[in-house]
Image (cartoon, rainbow, N blue to C red; front, side, top):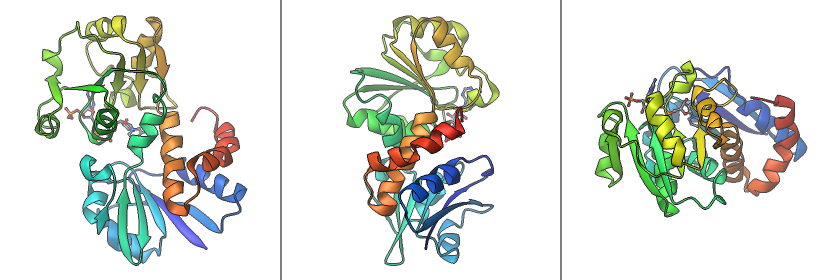
Length: 263
Ligand code: NDP
């Protein structure tokens, strides 16, 4: 039997084991997916000690996972963060499926420009996948340190206090952790001005009350939360784990997703 896991801290809340195991059963895969509370960043040693075939990595270990890999493939090389690990000939290979998971939500929406609020790990994944798809990207963050990476890579960056409220942007993304506390990531007045000209508001958070999306809804914007990003990144990881087409895995997960309801 092949064994997979999700690493993180905290990890008890993770829905990944349920979703993966549900699909493994449906697809009759001889595999099991579990969770592992990591208390150090010694990911490579633990991965091999647990005799895993593959793993997902969540907050706060995605950068540590990137550094632990013998080889990093695809867009993860640019992002500098890995959320999917596999074993190949006793080497640890890393990928990033968050970028794909995000992009699947908006790929047919004909968007020309996006504002990413936040400059952490998920903002990096989103910025690169948007750029790869020829969407203009602007990053805004409350503090300077995390913006350095983005300006070094040629992204247009602003501190929250310096952002021009009159920007004409199609997609406004909250990639901060503000929604964990149900706070807005920018001033109410700034968001209202941005939403006036936008088409879609996207918050990476899911399964909770979200001040950012509530404000956007009041201004009649289409709203997307992070639920499908989680589901799509899981399907993309499974494609890497088993070589199963991501759409086939999604349909195997579907009933499980319905059982979970508003995760
Ligand atoms: P990081 O910790 O790497 O970055 C957090 C960012 O949020 C930083 O830019 C930080 O600013 C900013 N920030 C934190 N609190 C506030 C606040 N109150 N107001 C304004 N800015 C704030 O986090 P991640 O990028 O890994 O994750 C961000 C969010 O996205 C999390 O809630 C996470 O759960 C969610 N997520 C969802 C996924 C999904 O599949 N749906 C996948 C990945 C992430 P500063 O630099 O100044 O500290």
